[in-house]
Length: 292
Length: 297
Image 1 (tube, rainbow over the protein chains, first blue to last red):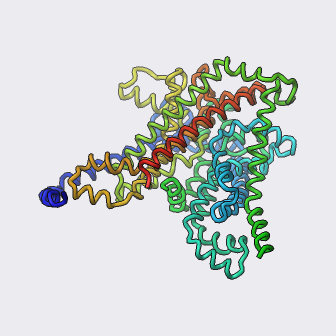
Image 2 (image 1 turned 120 degrees about the vertical axis):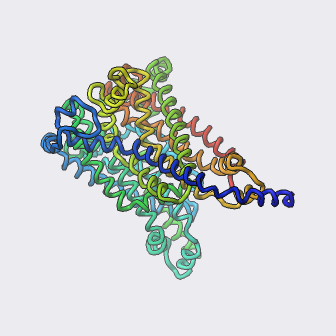
Image 3 (image 1 turned 90 degrees about the vertical axis):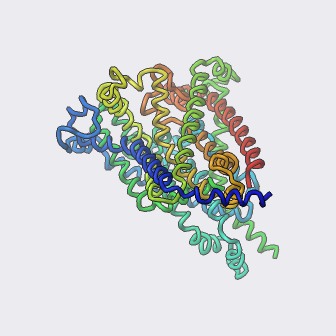
């Protein structure tokens, strides 16, 4: 069979690298990227330009770019009317606490599950299975429980729930990172008398550090963006996070689009800066788990 | 040797202990509590007021708003997943080559889904605004629309508009994962196909698609599960309206529990939602196993 095929493929050979065809494909590729770029970026650009338009222009025109000059009045008003620094601070505290909690719980658990099959099949299925349930289904019991133990309207209470929400995501990622490590190094360390915890902390954690960073960043972003638990469990400036700040602001002050745009941007910029710095870790960490 | 074994067991127990404790407190306990609460007539401030057996469940079955919210949730989840998969995977096929455009697109693709959904909803409210929104501005300007349209104020259109925001938010994510799946494909089948003289369409149908299928199914399942949870976009964009036309299950339960304070009834609704989702996940898992067996490595 191969004998018949080889000559025909040789025949086709000269026709393959057609230059114009390749140029067209290249153009199509760039055009697609340009379209994708427009669809992705225009809403974000519109938010920036709206925050810089004059309030009157916002009310009469939905053009992408301001035509009557650039104003900072929306930014001033946003910071005057909304306690933005407070919301952002609460978000940061909750985010850092929940990320630390998530890693404290997920790293040893993932290690024990992957290396010692701890909990057999049901523990990993249970942890990952919690990802399926929408957060709303546990909201009533959680609200009652948190009220009983006095953790309503406390940053720590919200951080605890963000840990619960992030646990399946973190475990999924970490299990994959740990699985990809060669087990021989760990075995050698155990021969030398290291305890399991010693191996985990001194060998495994340093080896999966890039994955650990990716996991931490994703937990931080998920917590920063989380809305439902924050809505149910916080009701004062003591613990309200940025998403709640935006939603309340939208409700109370009618629709002051310029101010909302400015306020929303203050919460977006930190995430983008973080993602920019850790871009490689993020893309790597997000994409590898699903490929296998 | 025996004591060593026991010490190791204790170490492992300490490793999984916190995770198990978390699951018991935040997943098992809420489930049992919800089941108990669902058989009572309860208010948020006064739980377990009166035992009513299955009344909440029979009410739920007759509740047209609840049925409607389940249908809307499925329409939303399957709709956005199908569109996001088609566009995301299509783009990845087109840009499946390490080049300037691809790297650029990959960096860009990260942005929407790390943006706080509440902020996303705020931008899109502004885009959809009937009097000064950008969409009306340009669609009317280009003569596509005759007059301004209230995108979030007309029943069917409001649902489509919320779905478009989800598509904006998640298509880049599907695209990123599709690129990773394509990058992980082996070279050998293509070389063999080239030797056999298969054209690029045949290669796509007989090699690329089957090899990608298990990975794509994982992405689709992730998106489906994610979209089933939709809450913040609806809360911010339409608050379930107009009427109940965008009132998805999460949002309806939220309203019953935290605005009408009928927590007993809300618990019955959550149990039904859990059963429905479990059935869906079971079907998806079986589907995944079949695909994995047929096309997997």
